[in-house]
Length: 221
Image (tube, rainbow, N blue to C red; front, side, top):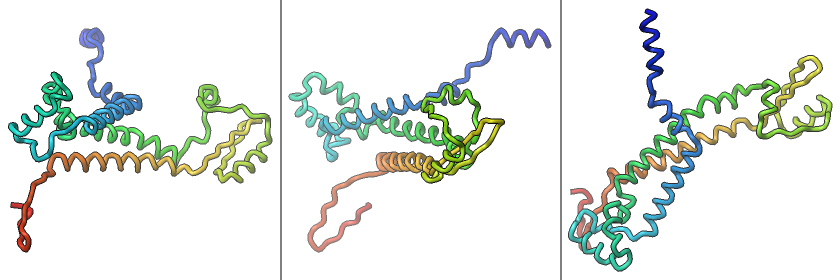
């Protein structure tokens, strides 16, 4: 039993890929960088000429269209075509990037669900004194009476609770805590927006239909 424990200790803990992946998906810096990169790619799809929809899937027509772009992009034309820069919004890498963004936003929502609901419905009304020493947003005020502070906060529509510990009074004031739930509405709106775009990209189609005057043509074959 001792030999087995010693061997396991020498080997060290097994590498868990889920932990660094979870930290990456819940990182605000990574989310900002990733969304910024997607915005740049989307801007490229707007500024760079795109293959006309009627020519997509037709190699001969696409080749003829690329020849007209060589005067602008020169020797970079073929490389840009292989990278999908002339069909950014239909490129496989762009669709995968959108799916990854949906996963990223969903993980962020799941990760913030519990602490946000706790802050809204069961906020910590008493914290250690060391919290104030490390807090980024803090202010040192002149001495003021507890009753005066409570009245001033209540006039500003704060919900006030006071606890006494010896000669020290701890005042907890909170106003409009439910506004923190708005983050879930904005994140869910983004997820639905991206999901709708992905469904359109994967299942949507376009076709040219010609119908003479007084005649009908089926939309679907």
